[in-house]
Image (cartoon, rainbow, N blue to C red; front, side, top):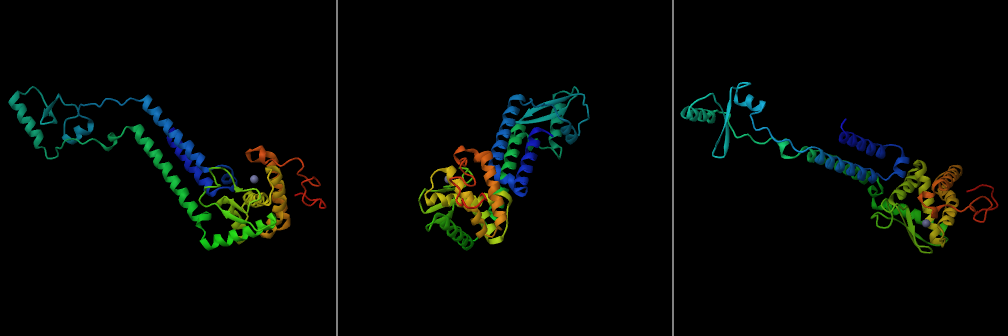
Length: 322
Ligand SMILES: [Zn+2]
């Protein structure tokens, strides 16, 4: 397969797997990254093709297709190109004088199927540009597919009433953690949190309103209203809601806030319908993952004190952590 074809097949495969494959891919790799890479490679192929292959000069003699159309012999003795009134006519010529030649030209004109040859559609665009346009069309089509699927399966696809009921529920649980009435909103417009900023939620320390990314809201909604658990994404969504609620309560340091959040999220998961064991298991997993990568930033790394019996243990009497 040629590299551009290979690239397109790979991009299509990636998008399909991203949409319908394991959740871990969706929650770790932003899909727009694949589009940026694909677009860059298409442009690189285009520039490479422009540099390496100057357009061949067109062969002005009759082509095999012309011979077939005009009925010339496969290898005529000689063909004469006659220009008249801006038209070009090929005339079989074997030493005729001027008058005979005029007759030959007239005969060529009379041929019923004679027409000035129109350029083939393929010749309108250089091949490299045509390939680039095909590539951009494939990328655009996939982006449209993603948009369509997201519209019909994402947080935005839920009715206004459902979303209002869900955020009310999130706010109630958030208020319990914050120790005061707070409002949890889902940032549908993507102006505060979302894929671009690569942030799951945002809250002002000590404030009363927090915003969650729509993906997190959807996972919380699925758990609370449908009883659906989506691998580690459900755990992440619970931890994010608890994390932002702790910010509203007044916790400023990110590591400490995350440590409190992973502990509070156990009860949060239980009130959203998880068993105590599952909720605990999920948050232990989150704690392990935090210590492994701290979500790309050491600011979010929970401090070493975040352990059973440590100063950040919210329930020092219990031997379980979180
Ligand atoms: Zn935070």
